[in-house]
Image (cartoon, rainbow, N blue to C red; front, side, top):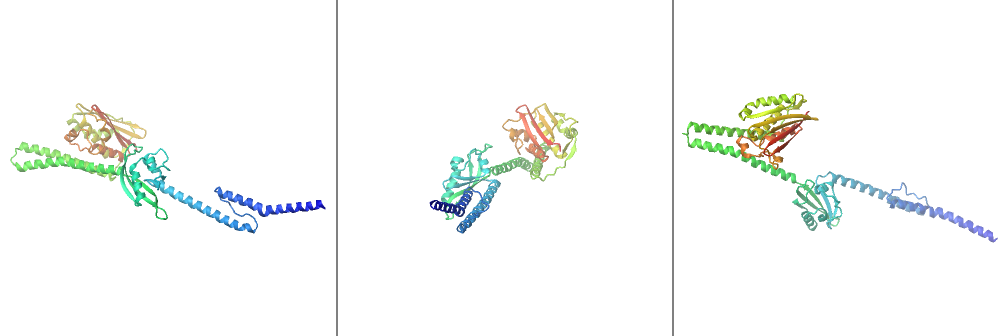
Length: 423
């Protein structure tokens, strides 16, 4: 009888354990796995626990929680994508700082602008950028809660080793209670704009100066003729000759300015044709023969007839050669010797004009293609030069998809090299 009681007790305990596992432990293990998946960031396919009715509410709550987590992750991914798209597409540098002046976010343009080698995030502006002006602008915005726009010169040098002129726009960030808890700072590089403004001012000053000289001469000689109607014929002839020379120079200056303006505005059409360069150079020298003889200049030509044909506008290419020959004559020393050579390298035709002139100082060499830039101003004006010849050469080469460079040994020679694509 005793052993039978023990058997009943064992059977009852086993049955209780099976029922407990079915009704409690198995749902709890399933619940534990679901919670572990949610905690690790996974998204369970289903929150069904397969349990008695008292677990059903927990199932519904877990299902709602899982859906909300999934929606939040989707919204977060979309916002992250939008923020990344906006930040990477901006040409301005952007940084976001918090109320402690710590950088929270930057875009690639800001890193390029300051040539940053270390990640600036979680560092202060002074630590990362080392710019006191930027720090002051951010401080003003955080303290006043008002936008601040200011133009500054950054002392930090970028990868091109040039100081930057930057327009800074700092906008405060307000939380839901209206309190300022950060700022967005936009860096707009206006260095090129400032440089172009300087070029424009210099150009206007140069044009005014170039026009003033012949106009002053005209006025002076006209007053002389009016005040002295009985001048000897020889003196009148001398005055007329001087006025004619300056009139020619003034006319050449205006024509060159108009040509440059049309080229820079892309309104100068080119009409390319296929040509043999040796034949073309010979024709240009025939047209230039009288001036070469007057200047007692000797020209040698090394342009092989076997060179491949070149596709270019003969009128514009003729202007290139005329301007280069003019410069070579003006700056050459007697006996004036000029060499024109050409060769084909790859898909480029390389045309060189070399003289035995006074050369160009190394400091002036990078600037000789600027408008009105002259190495020897007195000699150029004496010969009637406008100071625009090499600038015109550069623009004509660029119109053909080519380029122009200069080499020189000061006091001995100068060589201008024009590279043009064959097609």
